[in-house]
Image (cartoon, rainbow over all chains, first blue to last red; front, side, top):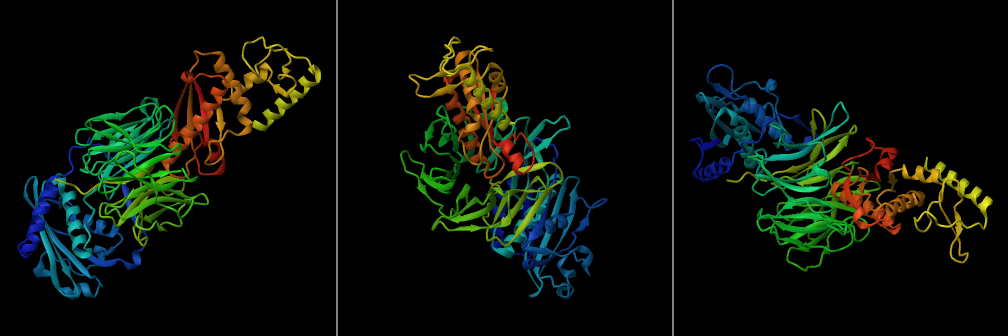
Length: 452
Length: 174
């Protein structure tokens, strides 16, 4: 649990935000079955040149022994991983203020830092800490924002991510996603040549990775519930594909579809009550269906003999975008969720546009775009069908998933034969690579903002 | 491997034709059209009133075909390639003859493209094999399909050879 309160130099308007924040952090991620997993490191591969220089000074420590946590290290790493900021290395800092009264803006102007973050971490009681931070505009020499966050020891990392979110929003106007989580699949080949498939949930920066499911048979297509409390996924345990829904807090899960044939590609409706999924049933023909999770009512939305799969809900829940190869190669289509609606083709550029995923505002569709046997991440504009390829140098790019703030897409690709995760900004300018320490990783899906 | 098999088959057929031209072998095995004769028997026979010939493999060839349990596909298609017709014919006829035998058709795709599309492609391939087996007389209840898409490659690697080996349907007898 992290509690945030504003520090006394901020304004009344910010007080409202801090209250909202209190609600948000109440949804603190907790209770995952915990086994530490291979962790991920993020490096910016493109777009660094336009990053805004910012100095995050190591926080002052008031407590017993060594500092309980390197808050500034996490904040600096978060801001850097977004590609929009270039944090200064602490060794280059000529002074290390921890309070506003100690700040000499000239120190930071000579280092070309546009912004400055300072703070302290206080140990109030054995398991109670207060992190305080302030953000300054160096050129204008004024304070932009400041907050105080309280948490237990186990949640200091979350508190640091919260600070990153607040700084990011203050400086870009875009909500930060540092407090969100991602889910992905890892595959490990063991010495006896068997394979182990794992479903992993980690913080958005790859830290704090926990395995939530593990199988000798393939796991694929994880999908978050809108409240971030459940994951749907496909498991081949038992010899055929089945769609499962697992509650993260408890680890309990339920097989919601184990019908004859293909049971695959689940995604939650925006209200969390339905799943869209792909079933082939007895006829062996893959079609989009919806399943009401409380009543078990199944509704078939497409009937074409083509492969219809990879459903993605529009934010209003009234239509579903999906991939179909009814016109030859895979393209994106849209169908209404009421019965008996006709599907309409959405993507026309290129011969292969698969795995559509709607942006949070519903205006863009991330796709896997194939051309001459090379597969890239692209975005299709819903309004006019125009395709923009974001990763033209990709060969094996797949599984795009929007960050909940809509400005970044995480996806899977290959490097030296290994599955790795990468991200690209929606405008294509910033690219990052998220390299795991061990194993093949793939199918990243970005979780929603935490909700109360 | 496949082409050498074809050559063998063709050679066997030619020699059979040479020895037994016009000598129709009765279908004493109860296997239906194009069925296999006894080990030592020749097995060409006229079709109806001479409207062509149908070719059946020798028993040794039949066993060789029966021991082949993988059908491969071209990229992004589920069309059965001609070189697998004999293999599927042999399995289909065996299933028709053994109605209690169950077979599981496991469809796979190579790693390229989207994973769920590849699940679809694997299912489409498994269904294509299923249809051919049923044309040979196998019953629908003997055949189950599962698609693994690209999730269970036979060969790791990202090159043409690995991809070729991964685009497949495996016939798994139970």
